[in-house]
Amino acid sequence: MQETITFFSGFSTPDLWFLADAALKTLWISVLSISIGTVLGGIFGWMLHEGKWMAALTVGSILDIFRSVPLIIQLVLFYNFAPMVGLSLDPFASGVVILTIYTAALVSNVARGGIEAVPVSMRKASRSLGMSYWQDLRHIVLPIGGRAVFPAWIGVVLGVMKDSALVSVLGYVELLKASQILITRTQEPFLILALAGAFYFALSYPISRYAAKFEQRWAQ
Amino acid sequence: MIEIRDLHKHFGDLHVLKGIDLDVKKGEVLSVIGSSGSGKSTLLYCINSLEKIQQGSVKIDGIDVHAKNTDVNKLRQKLGMVFQQWNSFPHLTAMENVALAPRIVKGKSKEEALYIAETQLKHVGLGDKLKNYPSALSGGQQQRLAIARALAMEPEYMLFDEATSALDPEKVGEVLDTMRLLAEEGMTMICVTHEMGFARDVSDRVAYFHQGVMEEIGPPEQIFYSPISEHTKKFLANVR
Ligand SMILES: Nc1ncnc2c1ncn2[C@@H]1O[C@H](COP(=O)(O)OP(=O)(O)OP(=O)(O)O)[C@@H](O)[C@H]1O
Ligand SMILES: [Mg+2]
Image (cartoon, rainbow over all chains, first blue to last red; front, side):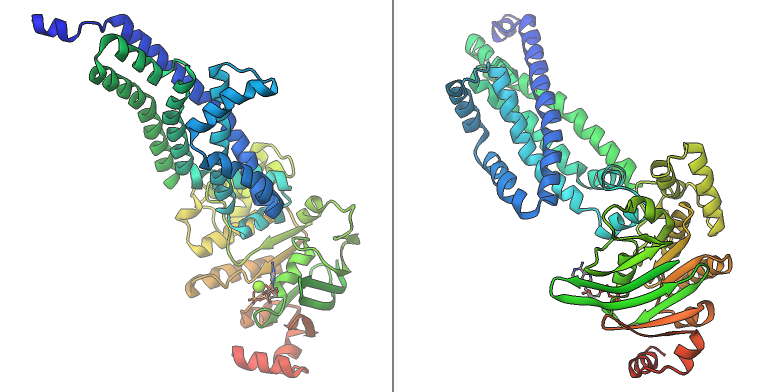
């Protein structure tokens, strides 16, 4: 009995709430970046598809940079250099900005793939029915292409959610940063990292399950 | 009436249609035959403006298809088109496939659009497949679905681009029967086809295309039994 108490010394129920609150922050920063990033990525993907080489040269190469440079470097660079151009953002806002662009860069490729997954002849068929370019995009390309690349998009979502841990380097107290604080105080790295892992799992698992359900329904 | 005058179409350096002159009257059924690459599909695409043209004109009931101020989305409602690939929308049921365009293009209410869809699906013999997704339909059924989908826009002209070429041989008949039914109902049709029996029995006129030129046009008896052009003779000898 005595032993168990010393083992858990330092970690208490309020710490659990502290972690839970940090998990919510991870969720919040992810939801924000992923939703804005997905919309932007969709637009960029459309530009890459439609704009041919002009867009590929401009938008394409800019997005290539964001896809290729490690996220942690982007975050630190942006956080430290943005104030120089008069953009003084707190760690949260900086994190959202970079994660959003990063998501958009990943989603743009997914979105272009989705558009290209719709056969040209099917789009000709919808246009031949009198649908406008935008009606075809909204009612044919979005649902058909969207379903084709949905698994890839879910992959991006789960990836960005985990990568959001990197915002901790700016001092924003999300799940990983909170764990580090607790580890320093309690000297219980295994317990706390296991708990943090469980929280990440609790955030990701419902998404994977829900996604699988959708895919199953569409497969019919 | 469809009036085509001196129509030229290029794909880059490739001169695909070399001055086509062709009139199709209301109620007429025209079959277009010819070897692969002779420009038959391209002709249909130029008629409903899925492809731009470089010279000449196409008029539908007096409206210049390729004029800048022509509303092609509106014009295309007059022209139904059926493709070689049946192009069913996989995310919609048979009924929703047919109802979509009447609803979003013509602004019909959902109930109206579904009623039209049901009527047209029954028309092509798919009355028992209303709620099926395309994946549960055979090729022949999907092609009839495509016909119903085009008919739901109440077109005055139907363009068929080798509607039976991608089908299993035993499914060809049901689609040809549907096309025959439309012809009997008085629909104006241009049918690009490799089905010589259909061209001979159903059409009022047959046009033979060779390397971007309309070599010969006339009643089926003339084209099939006493063709003038050497190319036509050779082509027909090969397909028989
Ligand atoms: N989008 C395009 N870009 C470039 N060339 C094209 C395009 N579409 C068709 N062509 C070319 O134009 C020519 C005519 O093509 P088209 O599809 O009209 O022939 P077709 O008579 O319908 O042949 P098939 O019986 O094989 O369908 C072909 O040489 C083809 O390669
Ligand atoms: Mg063709």
